[in-house]
Image (cartoon, rainbow, N blue to C red):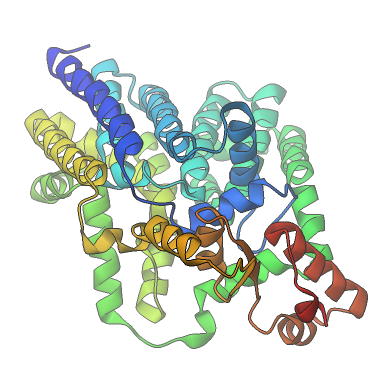
Length: 437
């Protein structure tokens, strides 16, 4: 390991300690999505309304072992990103066969602004990226040794990626492009048809419980994902398109991006490894960029594309000017330190409004609850989840016009309607008689 990488690695260890201290000291609350995942973990299932089940299973396991504390929940993304950073090292080493460059890639990944921010947020992207990187490594292993074991492992890891978030479909798209563009991979897969079939069977077997759950619930999660894309509401949005692209630059690091642009006038040699990296970055980035132009897109919707895109940038710039990489990493480190210092001291930044004040609000309601009110009706699922994790009140989550919504949209029968109400009862722990009537 070079001296520069060793020094940066030491700073990364101190950064991890700072993250842990900030998480333990902050008075911020869980995001609505985080609170929702925690609630799901208390009622384990093969599927849920808006996301696949894997993150909730992970939360259930971790909280079973270590308890339901805020610190325990927030330590999950920090820990997972440490593992992901090591996997980036393995991935880069297989691609570049250059240990100093591989270490540099791992450290660059750990210090990406998007990773620093995401390491405070318990989201499905955290586990998706973990298994996405694992699947990429396994694909490279298949190229080296197309054994039955490697194909089975690919199906297994890809299955877990899909159970994390359906955005794993971009891996399939990237793989198709790779097989079209890169003859070596196409030849390996062509000569391993039975092994590929076995890999697909493992993938389907892992997804089968979630597929059956969606079938039994009217393809609820799939429909939510499609509706969330809002492709039926096309309205050209060039400003949203530019906003999305700028967000990707900030997520990957300004200096790294600028360094790539500055030196891109030099001829870029697109070899097999570069094709590999671009096939698993550009399709997702182009699709989500197009969606941002047609309707809208959140910055994290193309998160998986940045995994290979940043490695492509680092490998290219590293060969020309290593100093650009280290300047980028130290700047990103400073940004990450500032972010977690603000989190630790509960800095009143507008971006933190969604995770601040809820504890004070619920404590105020608890103190003012002189009439011993036991039930509170909440109409927003994320507000309900946030409130449920912070208050001693028993909350009733009223799914916006529940009966009409489910009966008309999903054509549920009376027996199925009762199951929905029963589920709400399990989550909220109470339903008043008036609501039941």
